[in-house]
Amino acid sequence: MDRSTDLDIEELKMTREQYILATQQNHLPRTENAQLYPVGIYGWRKRCLYFFVLLLLVTTIVNLAMTIWILKVMNFTVDGMGNLRVTKKGIRLEGISEFLLPLYVKEIHSRKDSPLVLQSDRNVTVNARNHMGQLTGQLTVGAESVEAQCKRFEVRASEDGRVLFSADEDAITIGAEKLKVTGTEGAVFGHSVETPHIRAEPSQDLRLESPTRSLIMEAPRGVQVRAAAGDFKATCRKELHLQSTEGEIFLNADTIRLGNLPTVSFSSSSSSSSNSRQTVYELCVCPNGKLYLSPAGVGSTCQSSSTICLWS
Image (cartoon, rainbow, N blue to C red; front, side, top):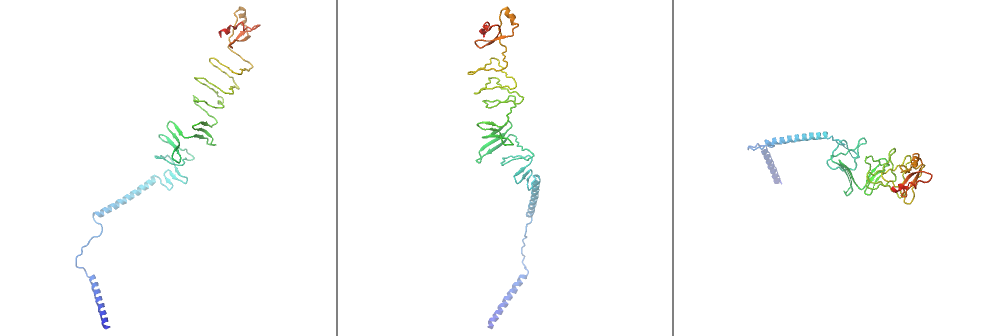
């Protein structure tokens, strides 16, 4: 028992001496010359690093200045850019704008106090397409003409939406109350014109004229020409024909005059002296229908002067 205790004491002493020796060796100065290595960036590498840092700082400042300048020039705000404003109803653009590429919009309208102007150096074309992308309508405004290509073209009134003008492949309809042609040459129609009434303007004459050909007026139930407050005149260069195939020609007036009828006279001296005072004539008719005047006598004088019928 005592021996084991002594052994333990000796081991503790040896351990303590080893610890003291090890501790003293750590505090002893080193006598050998150790080589020192510098830590960091020195020389041209350090100068290049400072140059790149300075260049990065200058670039950042220039970019920031350019960004601020662009924002100032383009007038960027929280509502939009320049004359372009983003509103709840869409985009509002003020002033003159140029579009270099196609513009796809649903609706374009101007302000209430200014018109909407679409301008182009060549032409302005408006296209309408269906859901398959096929062209269904086109309106082209050019320097020499305005062309519309569609199945049906309509012009409506702004008040009640009444159709004023419509055109399709079958017919052209004019729904205005009055069609007025102010050209000096009038209106030229290549084919027939159907209308129930032709009327001139107030205090103006109505004239139907065919400069080089005939003027024909036909109606299956009759043609009526009436002058309510004036004269009716029919003038021609050659012959004027009044013909009724089944009925009669009826002249109804207080006075009927036939002017420029040929007048025959007798060759005797007594008759010639009486012709100077003649005021009453007899109306004679040749077998071919020619009328002439013969001086009236006690009896009929048409038989004695019938030689005029031989020369007709």
